[in-house]
Amino acid sequence: MANISTIRTALANQIAEYAFPALRVEANPYDQINPPCAMILPGKTVAKYGRTLGGPLQSLGGTQYAATDLNLDVLVIVSHASTIERVQQNLDQWLGFEQDETAVSVPMAIDRDITLGGVVEWCVPDNCDSYGPIEWNGTMYFGARIHCAISLR
Image (cartoon, rainbow, N blue to C red; front, top):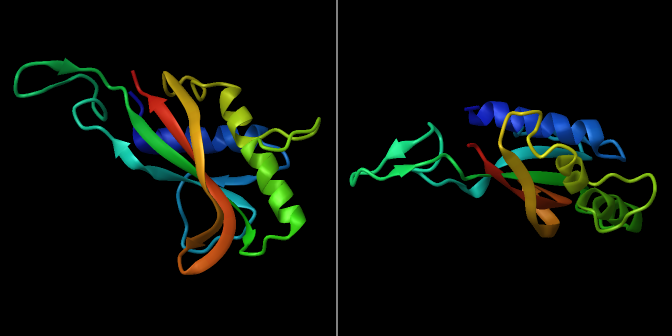
């Protein structure tokens, strides 16, 4: 079973390879960022103990659980907190809200290979929130979070 660092790297690489317009994607967060960019972050609920991070585990009652649930977020940051039309159009394209012949959104990039090159059983973009102003390390930016559900079996 892959560790969380390997999964973050595989997810970042796949998005960077397919998302267009080109989006620089980091597998780990940085204090200083240079938009437009995306970072892979832990989800609000990163893992459910007893079901992830180590394969089958036994509870006190002897019940076995399979590794199934891991949640990572793709934080897409387009610019500083400006909401000018072009910035919003770029974010909408990366989120999959605006589509044309040239755009490949982050969710579409993930869907190209839901196994992330065989690193996980599947990784699917689940939902998007925090659209608009987002604070990162004391600076306001314009962006959104895409939540991804991952199965490690």
